[in-house]
Image 1 (cartoon, rainbow, N blue to C red):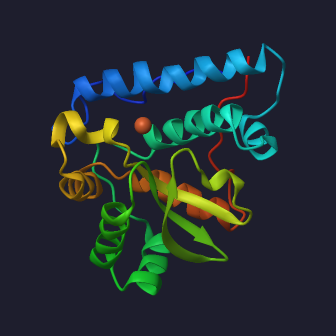
Image 2: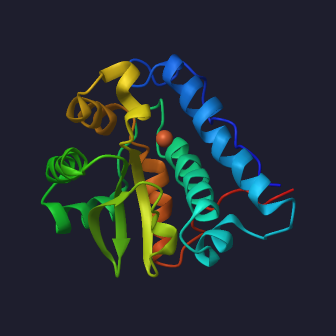
Length: 205
Ligand SMILES: [Fe+2]
């Protein structure tokens, strides 16, 4: 059975960008529902890592619930109530790809605002180069060979509507400025070059 990872901070730790009310719905209801549905669909079988389940799944309910479970767990860790900044290695890659952190911020917000309907906006590294991409619905970088995610922001309406109503741009700007967890991004960037392990969902118990 796959577990629902606990939030790595208090429910009110991300306010005002993300309220405790939003986190109670988003984590305790939405994310929990994906994990419960996935376990039901797998019928208690030991399926190994969630990453393997996602890669093996055909389009459909198992993929959707497994990928949404993974994306949300990574998303919780991609936020921090403590302000952080990219380390020197990541900062150099940001400069190379976007000019500076403001350039990355602009690309990230533009990608998220321009993404039609539900999905995810990601900062990823592929072949040593940083890119901003988005994926639709449950689609995830787990299935993209050679791509390591550094950060992700949920742009489904349930992620921001209670706090920002229809202002997705305002949510993305505040998210990037106040919540982006550069410590996770540093570690993921290092993992992409062979130093340390990339983030992984907890194994089933
Ligand atoms: Fe979500």
